[in-house]
Length: 367
Image 1 (cartoon, rainbow, N blue to C red):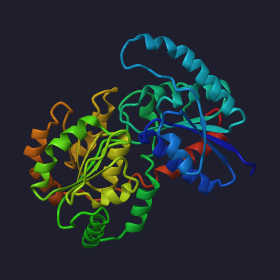
Image 2: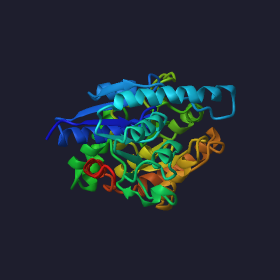
Image 3: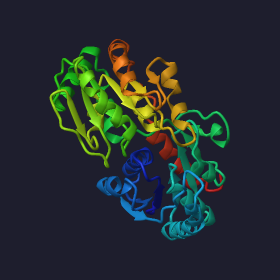
Image 4: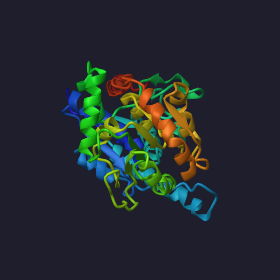
């Protein structure tokens, strides 16, 4: 079989990049002779994550969509035209495009449509974003991480959400491990991060960019939390300064060993992005979710399944204050320790399912 060119679009945050990388790594294993190209911009997290994974990254102009009406909106048509032209150049001769949403994907979808290149779209959120809704106008090869209530994505293939390679590997190796075995593994991982294995561990992650709102609450409440013998591992985000560590509190800008951090944790505080919700469900942890206050409300919807299962608490950002956390942390930690859900392996085959959909699109370009 001749070598083919597969283009991946999905940049900006880890929520778009990590699923794309998981599928790209799987595709590379199945089709080692194919060329894989990632589209990205100079300001996205893809500039570090994609080359580190060993893939070719080609940059396009970022289309900056303001969140409120302003003069900067006048630049959108020029930026979009330039970005589409750049995508058309990169896509010349490509065999298939797969997009995961975000600002990189929209011009790629339009460019692929004008070149009549088959495309596949994966939507991780319960409420599809504008870029993927645009792309869905040009293809029927749609996949979703969880069921979508309405619109074209309500008829999409439910594949689950592609897992980070380290999490997928952890789950594959841990099949058959009993409760005692997991307790021993968790104690080992707590030691790895420098914490007393006898103390409950709170893991705080605000997304790849960090969350200033969450960081402020943790900083003001952490000493009171630590007084209850609860340790804290805090990912503050790449643009935020780390605090001085002690035996009960450690902060880093970005957790490289995320699978190990999830295993070590007893309770997680995080935004409820689709990827985070998938990882929390997969590893089998209890979480406090604070949906991002901007966007189209997809983060609040993402967490509803876990909340309905009794595996998470959902609180809006205005209500998530230092006093609320201090007043509730002990009770929620107790609930997490005594009712932690078991691991859910439903997303373990997501990369294989999406790869199969891509292969179908290649064989049936007009489908």
